[in-house]
Length: 121
Length: 110
Picture (cartoon, each protein chain N blue to C red):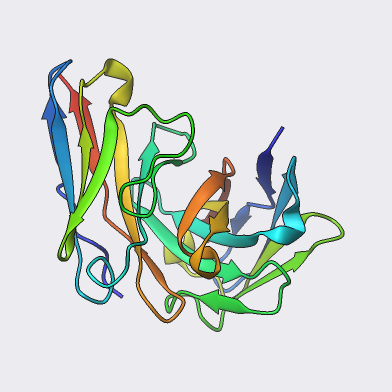
């Protein structure tokens, strides 16, 4: 079955760090760019980060630049998001999504179910 | 990068058609044919409904269609069905390796 499965979400204090994972299955992971998209409670979707299929290029939304790091391990079919210096406004459901066309930002044709990050003291 | 502008809500009766707009700028919607639409039911992951302005992925009913004129894209749902009730989000490539979403529209089937 073609799917993405996120994990790693947790309750974290402000200023803390967290590492999210997204395990892919059912498709040739190394051939696709991957993204992270987040959704704050009751709010809309926000693109967070993109990594090319080879891992050679990474891009970030301005709101997370310098605090978030995306990476991938094609031997493990997994993409990661390292989140540092967490703020209350980072509280959200974090989805990973497979990117198509235009370097992986054309559209997202496969989504995981998300992992919840809550930042609170 | 500012979010694309969508109406917060839309509604229609079963069998009717409803159109949801998505307004951006010449730097995003108007500048690229990479506008997508996603459907999200409560507590579910988003689902791709339309890509590249007007293309439908396999399995998406042809009741869903997309278009664009200038800086505004539109999603039309024809022959409304109860299961179409959901939140809908547009997105657009916004240049310089950036992507922007709309604020979302809650579609209610009356």
